[in-house]
Length: 77
Image 1 (cartoon, rainbow, N blue to C red):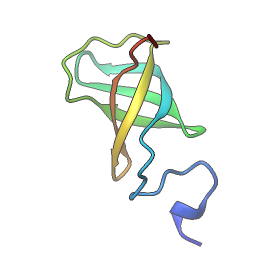
Image 2 (image 1 turned 90 degrees about the vertical axis):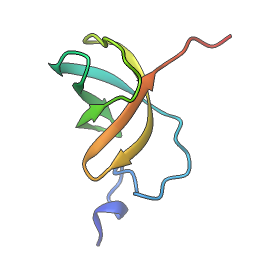
Image 3 (image 1 turned 60 degrees about the horizontal axis):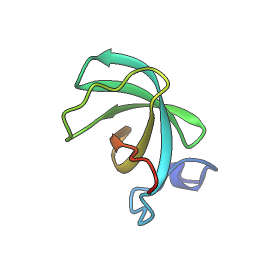
Image 4 (image 1 turned 180 degrees about the vertical axis):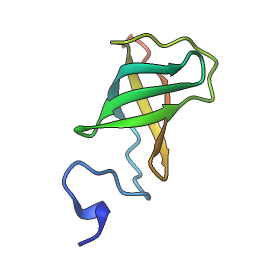
């Protein structure tokens, strides 16, 4: 069994990048956060300059190894 086959673990070639997560911890303000997504806690970073706070909802747009790439979750129009 590979790690990708474990329930909730996002495969590296995931084409559906619409998963949401929640900021659980601010590790380094403006640079690194801990995010609850896919049923687990992940370290995350963002290409977008922003100040996420604990409890903020985010959009998971990619994964590099065990680190997620996140963006602000924009309100639905």
